[in-house]
Amino acid sequence: MPIKALLADDSDVMRSAMRRILEDEPRIVVVGEAATFAKTIQMIGDLKPEVLLLDLHMAEKRAFQPELVKSQLACVCALAVSFSNDTEARQLAESYGAVALLDKMKLFDEMIPAIMRCKSDRSTSFKRAHAG
Amino acid sequence: MPIKVVVADDKAAVRLGIIQMLKTDTDLEVAGEATTFAETLELVDSLKPDVVVLDLHMPDERNYLPESVKLQVLEHAGCILAISVWNDSEAKALAEQFGAKALIDKARLFSDLIPAIKAFCLKS
Image (cartoon, rainbow over all chains, first blue to last red; front, side, top):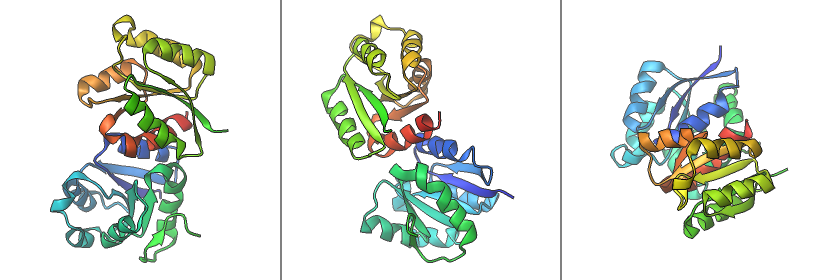
């Protein structure tokens, strides 16, 4: 059974880019896309994805503080996505309950391996996407 | 081999920003810059780039139909990504007429351009 992935990014270009990267990977199927935190939470409930690709910088993030969102994301393997890879970004990713932070500039190389690690490694501890 | 990119925008600040961003990625190489559609077509013909980052609105746009630019560019280049300050349905339709794989909002160049180049142009 392919891994069910939900794409959450307020940029339609980024969602298309992620979908494009994944479309030739038979082990992964994109079950939906969301452009807001609210829609992301709704779609997690409706679609039950196994993996969530979560843009850390979606527009209404002020209304969705990490501590409010984290419990809603607990049932998926959340991979945070950001153009920043600094300490602040990593801390924000961890606060959302993400298991890794992916660099937007390296999605082409990092995204599929990170999704596959979600399936094989059930640990919930935060890891660098490209570590190990 | 790095991906060769031609950057076409009439605004020097935009070109400079894009070029500086592309230089941070060793998979990409800026092959040339253009400020008009005419210059773009000349550069594409001589450099045969993999990717053309193309501003939808440049000073000589009235002399160039999108469809003819598309044909001439794609004869020598692998992929077109359109950029614009507009991101509405009209801009997206225009980007399609130019044969662009995607339209990047200029406000989001920093976060979206390199992932778009790799997702839409590398795979083709």
